[in-house]
Image (cartoon, rainbow, N blue to C red; front, side, top):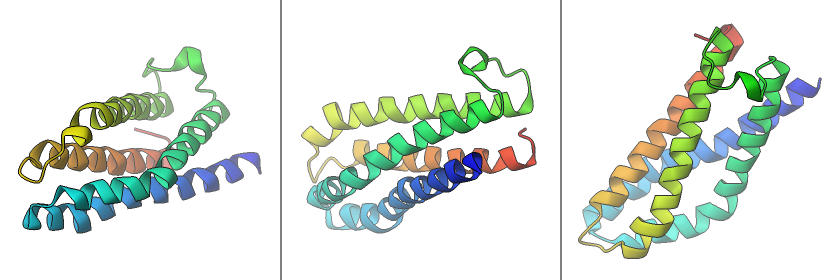
Length: 147
């Protein structure tokens, strides 16, 4: 029962995190590019972060707890020795990549974001969205034993 509760929390948090980035990529990014208006992206970021960042934290916590349920403990991270460890390790690498990109976005991209220079933010948004969808797909592979 514990694992199922963790899974439901994980899926709800993933819905917010991945759904928010898909919505940003599909709805707001094209509008910002078309109108050449950086404020569209800044406004979305300001409204999404209070919900998105806690969901990311929930994803990390529940993901680690569920990995332990599959006996993928800290000492087995990045060992890639069985199918589930491959999924967990790949997800951890993608998570770390996402975290580095989030730090770069907060320090370098968004503070300097101008309407005539949307390319760096666009690339960042699309990359984080693709990573989020990839994490979701990888998580679904656990049900069938990994890859």
